[in-house]
Image (cartoon, rainbow, N blue to C red; front, top):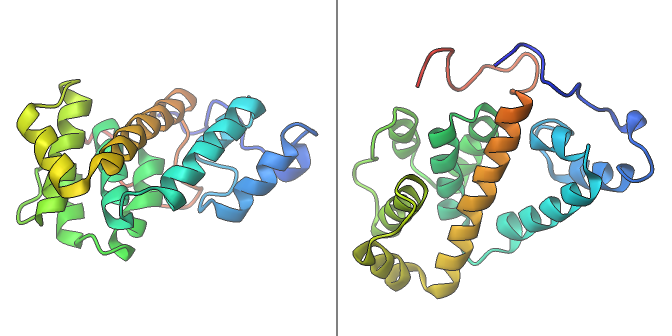
Length: 189
């Protein structure tokens, strides 16, 4: 990634009348302020608002338990090598109860060992869906049995949404806040 994002970081003072309500809502919940994917999404305020509303559901109203939700986000972040997603969500995943050993294994591009059944189901389901673009019957059935139908649907939408965010971040070459360490070093795959 280049040293500067492709879209200069917006400030609240720069937002126009269409962007300002979204900017105010973002500031209330974002660990990266108007940075991260929001910096690009503010350039399309209607899309940005709709994505923000979807993210509100997927982060705070989803049927998926917080630990599993954050784990799924990290799976996508690692697949995409998304600096911002990993930076923002690794601490949240650990705070939600995901083992630091599981986070470390995932960061090292390994299938985490010793996962409880629900975590293993999330890992296998999200990984198959996003890398093979299908889910084997045995994987689906296990996820449905352990998580239930609504959680499987919410988990699928979460994976797709965070893939979209990873794409926005990659396109805009958005990185972690200035002065913060990159989770993935240059050249690290």
